[in-house]
Image 1 (cartoon, helix red, strand yellow):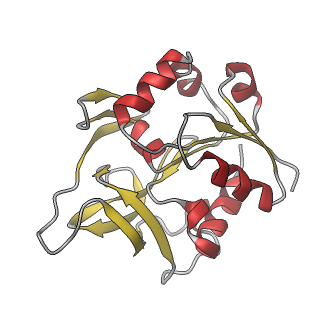
Image 2 (cartoon, helix red, strand yellow):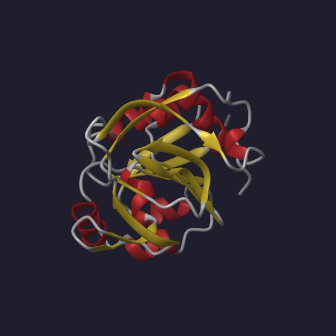
Length: 200
């Protein structure tokens, strides 16, 4: 599989594991915050951990907000990277990339459930014919770590923790996973492989 993948350096702690996961699939992969390198990648991954405000500040400081908005190749957000694709986040009342309509909000959970939503959970595929769903099993489990979540309007798969939320979204060439595919064993590897094989 000869695909040039660019992982945007957002300063998150999970960057190395994302790069390694892509390398294991046989793709060339580089970690960068350089605009010209990001534009030239055949696929782009936007990972993220931490707060929406801090991540958006880092993207603005690096001059990458308009760069990301202008990308036409397949883009995959991971965890906070999914939330940043939306118009805004209630976390710090943050204006985000505005690529997907809607607002990310804090998960409201009953006392019996903990927050953050951390650990393994399953998906409900609302668009099972989506290319990211190819070869996955409905009983697969995926690893989540988050306290805020996106609405389900643009979801191709949802999950539930206190309430339903978007687990995988897609709009135009932008898709994203709320869970960490790089930490989700064979199920996550299948999602990443499907993204690498997606059509530009």
